[in-house]
Image (cartoon, rainbow, N blue to C red; front, side, top):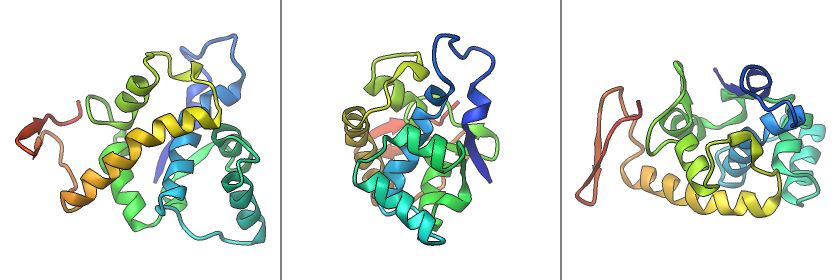
Amino acid sequence: MKYDDASWHYGGQFPADLPQVAGATHIGMYLAWAIMAGLGVDPVDEVDAEELKELSRYAITPGRWFHEKRDGIFSSGDLNAEGQAFTRAYYANEKGPLEGPNTYFADYNDVFQTNETYRVTDRWSNFYHLRARLDPRLAMWRQLGRPWIKDGESITVGGKTYPPPE
């Protein structure tokens, strides 16, 4: 399953003053985080292993790594079973990117206090700001028993009810 593709973001409302790699930043930050959180698959060969080392040594930013080394495509093949389940509950499912509160895109825009997703600069300091939101989201999901949240279903955590993504 393809979760996201940087090329999907280049057209339409993509700002003309930004390079295409800006359409990969939000995806690259998520996938880099997922891999560093242990949700990625093992490298398939030596080239893949070296590209992951380059990322983990901060030799390349998450968006650029995703754009150049992953061809801008984020799919289920990038993640282990747990990573796929979390991503389908938080980032995107068969219907496309999840929208509404408590989703990756809502969190991304909230962390960076913007509605212009593509204008977030691809740098490690921004990655770590985002990671501070993603780590607790993953921990909460695990504490809830790794739920698959169905369409139209709310969840309650600590007495607070969270509505389903729209």
